[in-house]
Length: 199
Image (cartoon, rainbow, N blue to C red; front, side, top):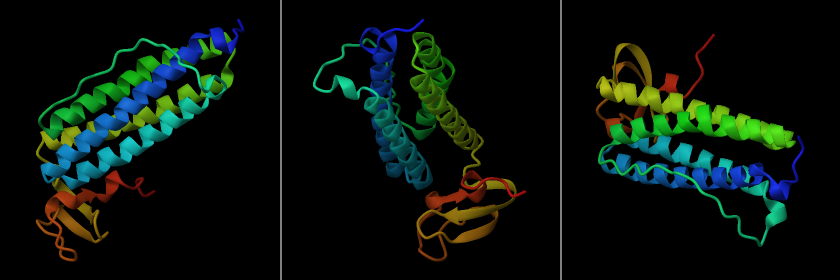
């Protein structure tokens, strides 16, 4: 069934997605500030990196509404309030929110766009939904490491990179201080979290 764009639910879903991505960007920027204050610079950078991707998603959805420039689109929506005092709770909330977008919101929006005759928009919802799944998995891995008190230690040899200067150290723990730039341990991450596994 084909529907005109101006009368479509897809038009409203694009605005809902724009609003959701915009709010996610701000929530992750706030979470990055919390991680920085707690000396967890690796998590600060992950939240910031993800916030920038959410901004890119917001622009993709917003650009689809070009023909309505100068108008106001009224939508309803529900958005989380994640004002948690510690980074682990922020990570857990991020996991939930990312999988909510992937499994429910964008899957439903994609199906509706397809039904209404907007295959390009449907494709965008599915593609961005798959990125949200990746976000959720990354946040989940980091939350598990924090829960296990293993963010900077491992039971096996790892390659640890200083995110400030790029120095790599091998061992079962990130160094307390980078031997090159003197940044504290909170700047280190496993390279396996940054790079795909070597084949």
